[in-house]
Image 1: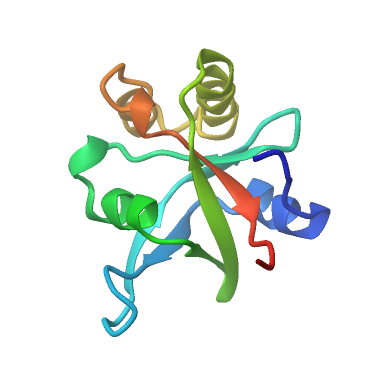
Image 2: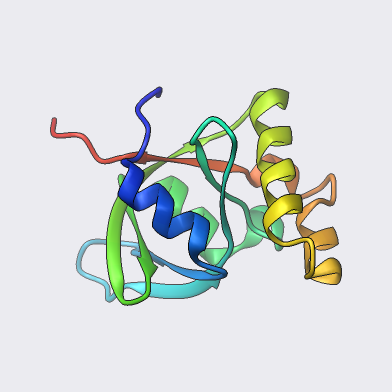
Length: 129
């Protein structure tokens, strides 16, 4: 995937300290929301990652579904997620987290642990099929 989110969405993601991710294990099940961090790198790529590794509920549900919702200040943005498997984007996410969350040292260090790096996801706009 190479499509990027719009400037308005990227701006909201840059400004928000925390957002909520909304996932669904199945279409007929109520959505699950939890607070996460989102960061945007210098190339306008938006990333998320879980501090709890692959066992995280929202992470498993995000990978299993077609789309997730990112809720920022009450506004829901529907996005698709791409598992990041290349070192360049994993490091870009880590650097974006370092810049944005530098004052949250303990939590930041958790998000930079080697075991959670493989949970990096890039956010993309939802495209019509």
